[in-house]
Image 1 (cartoon, rainbow, N blue to C red):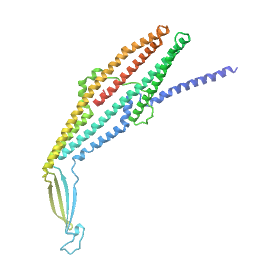
Image 2 (cartoon, one colour):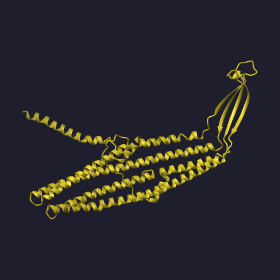
Image 3 (cartoon, one colour):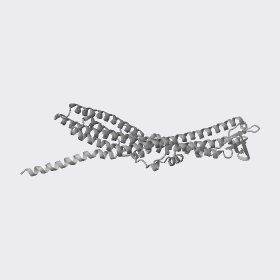
Length: 431
């Protein structure tokens, strides 16, 4: 009579236990959903708002842009007050410092006025320097973006290599079981089982190295994202697709580099600043002015007005010629630096395009030819070993070929991603 009431709670308890197990199994996946790292895009978005180095460059660019207006503004005027005859000589009064109780008081308002065109040139120099700061900020982001893309590629590579090694370890354990079974039946020597165990030990050692490599990549990414060094990242899910060869034409990318590269933009701004500064130095051949207006107070009345104009006399011509030669030399240096930067960038672009194409070809060759051949070789070797036609060394060698082919494919993919990151850094934008 108690059987049915007893079974019902047991079934319900089993369902609750199963639900609890499923919930616990889903917890890591749910936890990973809130972590960055599943894709490189999530890391780049986080870095744009959190990386302190890039933030410093943006603030410097903002500060430089705020210098443009003050550079072309008039200097502040000066107010000068002259108390005349404070001893009241010839007057029946004692010395005094009040303006209405002395001989007279002269108030002079002086406004410095640079020679025509100097203010505009100063504003142009400040604008060019602000463009340099913006170029440096853009270059800092391009560099940071490339570092994140490269570190993510290494993080993905280490993670995938670890998974592949574990799969091969499981496969080797299965081979060991086959070997032990055949050894128990006297079909193979004990050496085969020992070699399988040695192979497993070597793979476990490689797993330790891969775990360390993965940890280093994670720490590097956390540092770039301003996160705690030991903070977890989500499991990497995918790499970015490599652009089609038609989009990697050197001539087209060369034009984009000349037009978009932030380093070149900064160097061009440096040249513009040097040109405007040279023009400004040439303007120093002409005088600057001081304009003054002076009302004169006598008693409580203003009964006199004076107008003053003052200018400096540019007599030190040798000094000015030295400044002009300095400005010309600085312009030549800026132009040479721009040319050197451009040549180096174009050389780097060519090098990375060639390396990317090589990595693409290697990956295609491994994926379409070498890996299928290695898998067929392993299947044939396994069948031959089970029938006693091949020795265990041949079987292990076939397994190593599969593992090497998969790691070579992963290495080629990682190399392509790193080269793509460098190309995008040179272009200053994503492809």
